[in-house]
Length: 133
Image (tube, rainbow, N blue to C red):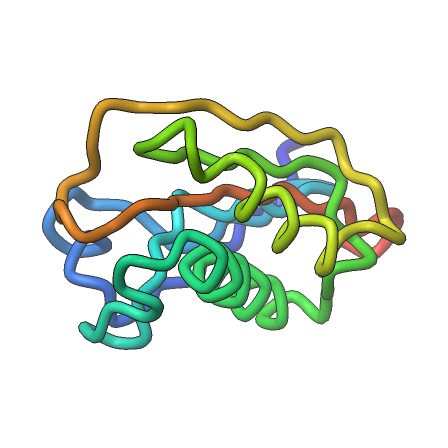
């Protein structure tokens, strides 16, 4: 017996181009794909890793709302940065959003993103307990 899987799409050009979903719920988990700091097609916080982290996490948390979840349900975060110098700024944004929740967190420095203006991309995973609607 398999559980239903629910997928949420957005207007991101990547959803269609690479054939992905913004978020996928399966069982008691909701996985949010890599989220960059865009609102629609407009980059938020250009040049500012703190603002970009807040915007990227904001987009990821918005995807969780489709499942009735918020920051309190987040159990894992992943933060990808293009510069080691941005660790403190991105960490500060993470702490502001998830300090009370304390998810398992990973921060990795990567060489670049598909848009050279992006400094931060994030992923989140949430737990929805017994609620599998």
